[in-house]
Image 1: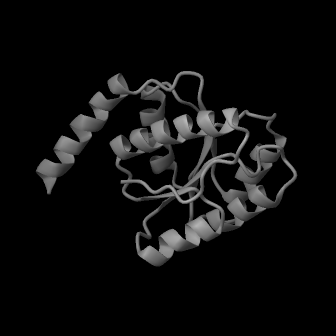
Image 2: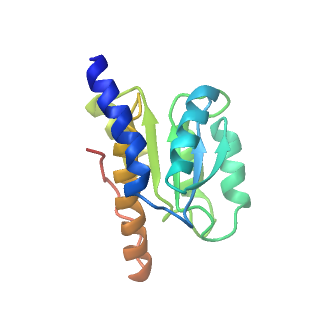
Image 3: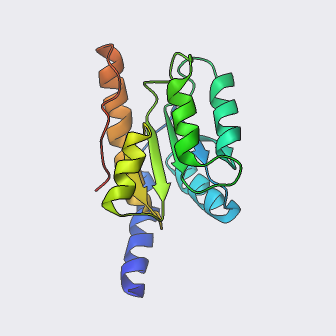
Length: 166
């Protein structure tokens, strides 16, 4: 198991060389300060600009106050104090913000059962990542998400719901 973690870590550390998300901005919603710092560091290694929120209520406020097209994606923890990720996603999706329906929202949670994925998707999320986070998987999913967003925005359609990580 430790060999797998070591290989995974080395791969993730090499991955930013393979991924360059310059000009992309993500709202990282995570209540655990350590997890937030680690994810933010890995995202910055791939040149992702990151804003953070420690709960769903702050995330919703930041999203509502953002200009059109400001966030390219939202990485949303599920279990948080004040407002959980499901509630925050529902508020974002139901809002009148021009990006409310199209911004990709990716669940990040330790809950990895099929019903957990279904709950994420039914709350309006586009994909579901299990913790502990595999940064290489996040990079791949962000690449797909950003390409999908560019493709759908050029076709003037909403981002396709139901995408899953590997």
